[in-house]
Length: 530
Ligand SMILES: O=P(O)(O)OC[C@H]1O[C@H](O[C@H]2O[C@H](CO)[C@@H](O)[C@H](O)[C@H]2O)[C@H](O)[C@@H](O)[C@@H]1O
Figure 1 (cartoon, rainbow, N blue to C red):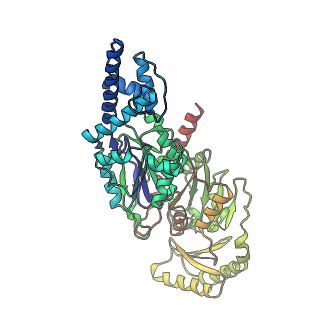
Figure 2: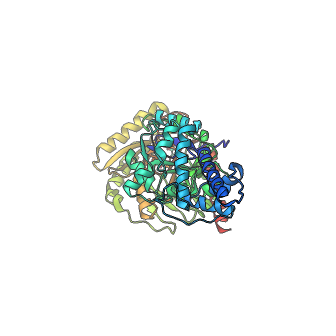
Figure 3: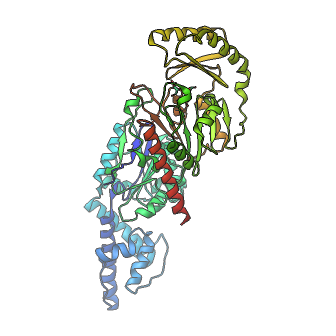
């Protein structure tokens, strides 16, 4: 069993759509018995008439070879050919008594229905267990099938009551839906459940089925490999399992309830990350302080290690990378020293492209006079206070109190509040041992991230934004990509609510994660080139 099990999380998905045959029900033995009954009786009649002897239908040898998975009439034709028999095609309306390809096919179908009634069908109990877990997690389920016998099969397998919605062969005919690999039946099932395809999962055991799931823009496509076709399924599936017992279900951890302590480790779940990246490209957004460098006493001492710098630089060869910092853009550009990437400074008010050209985003300019005034007033009040540090960024001012004795922290805050009171254009935000004054407009790291995605034409289904950050201001960005992307928090000792999905413990783990991501993308590109 795969130790990196795929996860269906209620925070990410509203619905799961199951294919019937091979995923929920096991009807191969029913089909095999019906084929045998039909072919053997036909061969017997023919022998009596012609005097020729024919080898009867063998379930072991002939089923997979001539009829399994094939449209009904193709199966009849191919098996008869193996016995040296050729028959006219006939028409789909031919009665079961007719000696035509269609007639014998229809005879098999009526035997199938008889055998189904006599012997029943079986269901995969691990699939049923998964459906029950999904229900408990509040995730809706639907069943789809191309078969016009689906209702009978489900009833025979005692699986007819398991689902919230159904789109089978009869429904598809009535609705005029094309079959797989067209995605229409899956999309219709999602619609019946009131779920968007992007927030729905498709579970399929056939190649045309996973292809349909991918074509429909479903958020996750799980291939179930029942017949040794892992590679073929993996062409379109995000993940392939041998059995649905491998799939985990996570109940909804509403962001407001979820805390940093609840997050699984992004390194342990790296397989989930690569699953999300199947046929998609990441766009990586990185915070600086606390993420690429450990937090230190003085902001000017937060120097990136050469190893980290090189890792980010290498990653930038394979995907879009941006450093999104609260620092002044030029300051963080210099400290990070990574070339040919995007930089967003002052919490996203100041953005430059990989050539260092400022990107058009002029919202902060109007606030420069207010910031200049506030900077002056803060220096007047705080320069004499031991340990206090006023850090001017182009579009924000940080007041650091990490080195101020705790007994004087209130004094720092009071000074900041007094300066704030003098300006109607600024607002106060917090961070790690800092107070910040920023333009009082609806702009933050999250808005900047969205702006960059739009600007770089990365706001697409085949792009997965990944954001890594540690501070409160990073939550704006983590919230922005909560559904669409992968948010990773660099954890602190103290737990707090978060919009991240995974956690890393420190900057060393951030580097390992980024290196693994680089290696994954590099390997994938090499494989694509082969
Ligand atoms: O968005 P970021 O890149 O994480 O920037 C947030 C703030 O980081 C810096 O301050 C923090 O790191 C300092 C150095 O480790 C530390 O001394 C301070 O206590 C932290 O708050 C930076 O100086 C600020 O301008 C950024 O807003």
